[in-house]
Length: 217
Image 1 (cartoon, rainbow, N blue to C red):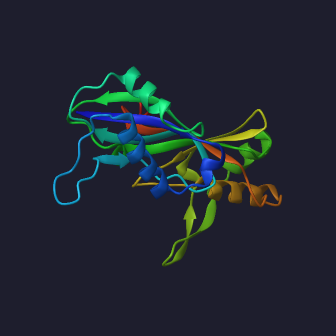
Image 2: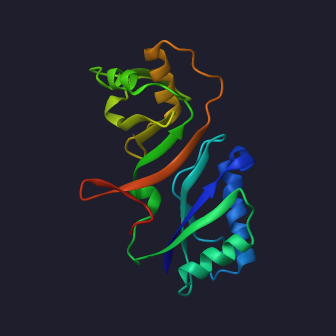
Image 3: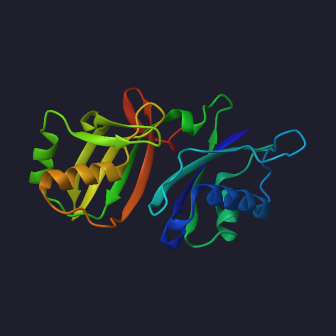
């Protein structure tokens, strides 16, 4: 049986890397005594697949990973027992049963929402989005190239003094919120803060041409 778990990662835990978070949940599931499925072979491990690694320093209230279990588990009981053994900065928000033929969330991922503590007026944002293109210099370990990020910005607006972003996120198209902040500050002719507090709010897959939260199966 397959299941998808939604969780939050806030506070000082935002400085913990992805591999440590993965190890944490492996231990948490053992402590909670969930009947999770293990791989076969000399070094069996829990069958677990995280949707998308979260960059160090970013909080989130919309993280996901998929697991397989040997038996049916009551969703409410799973959330309760997991939260009994976790820390305040990591909370399990939802446990969703999946169909047997469900694809992994990492393969479905198409978009993500972010909240960024940067107060820029909606008038400036409208002018920013009305540009024919929004070009940035995107750097990788092997190269750097100029990329037009405008098609990858689905929503961008000021909500109560914070930037709300809905961006392309997945294996096909992927845009980091930091790049949007950098381009927006440059356009607004303001100095980009040394540290900008960010929080990932939700992740989506595409269904019938619309972005649908990963916990809506």
